[in-house]
Length: 80
Image (cartoon, rainbow, N blue to C red):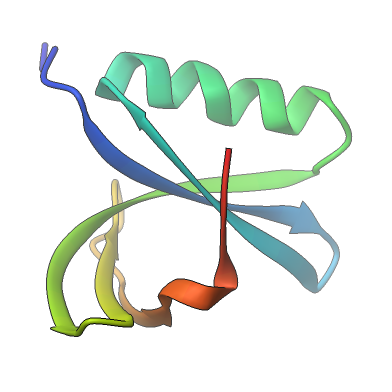
């Protein structure tokens, strides 16, 4: 199991509305954080990892599990 700490991104919310958070943690910790977000009122939560950086203020993220890729502005992410 991967115990390396790195930045993980969480997209969580309810219905069609969601928000992004980032946390520096291990993958097992990321799964626990996602479960906690779901338990605290968010009905869904996905875990994302950085794939590459487009510019200083844009990231390319991929979703763990599905491999979906998404571009995201760093200004849309809340640091927890």
